[in-house]
Image (cartoon, rainbow, N blue to C red; front, top):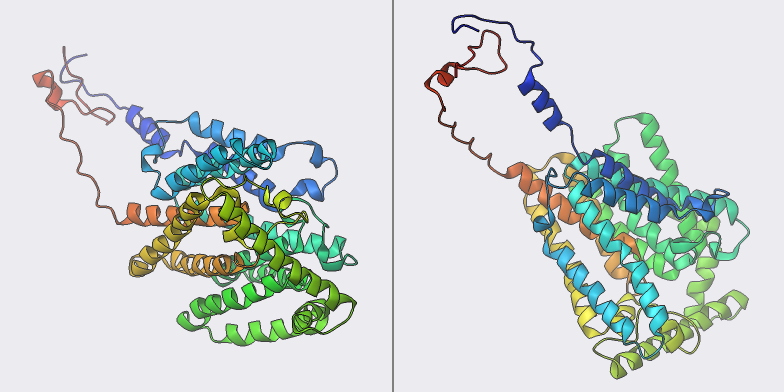
Length: 451
């Protein structure tokens, strides 16, 4: 073609196609399977949908999410080099748990097996950080967790309306009434955040109904620890959304609903609190025995720490060591007795990183969009609930708190990405031929260089 000739190149030229290809997020498929994993873990459909209990859906979705990530490795926005210290602390904690399991003085096989099962949280943690690169994705994951817990509450109330304290109605992380109450309390702030940020009236009604179901299930569990946790976490939540957010009507509404729920379904909860004062009765006697058993379990946990302070007795071996086949009802003692003092220190540093991330986010509130500010308050309320609830429940292997730490790390990284200065464009390459200076690829009327 001659130098002076001009041709019309289609608008969707080579460069346009490349731009379109780059605009498509290569991690979309991996994020889909991460979302599916959250549905399986949080909603536990195998417990209330027939036939699904024979399919290892959690393992399948986790493996597919990992495969989706590694299949696009090198084209992702974040890499393993970007993993924050929280992820490294979690990995160190799991490594020490494996060592303690292999050297367990109680039951090596059980400790190693439990550690292998717990190690899944690290895989999920890494996937959360690497795949959730926008606030919209983070909201989707939190939405799945919150909606799943709401569905679980309705299923538990419907299936277990005649079961005392909803005990064993569902399996896994919701089988114990104290664990169910714990999951509800740390999820309620997210539900309120979705209620306040929803624009659709139908969505607002759905969230109100969901929160009523969660509150009802919490009262029916008659969990004293869950109720105390709710009071403290709820106070922080109302401070963020009611006082700082200037929605004082929330305080009145929450107080009214709480009184109604306690009046309608709080009989067993009242009896269990009455047992602490020495009142007699069948329900009170049972609750008082539970109280005495908890004191004994704490003493056994302290004994385990005294005899095995470095590597502990192995994951989930506290039930055997307790002599009464129960777990100590305090997360910090559970972690220290089963993992050793070094694991407890790492665990506390890991949780402390979440509060550090929240402080960073709160200082940068003016640069954040309103939705991020709202969910920063929800995460802070949830963590306050966790730290308090951990004093009364054995939640060392519950994934929700670890997910929440990952959420704070993701939000900090998103904030950094938004405030980072744009990188300068690379300098143009020197033309290899003097006529290439007149070449303009991908545009109509471009001059084709002559070699």
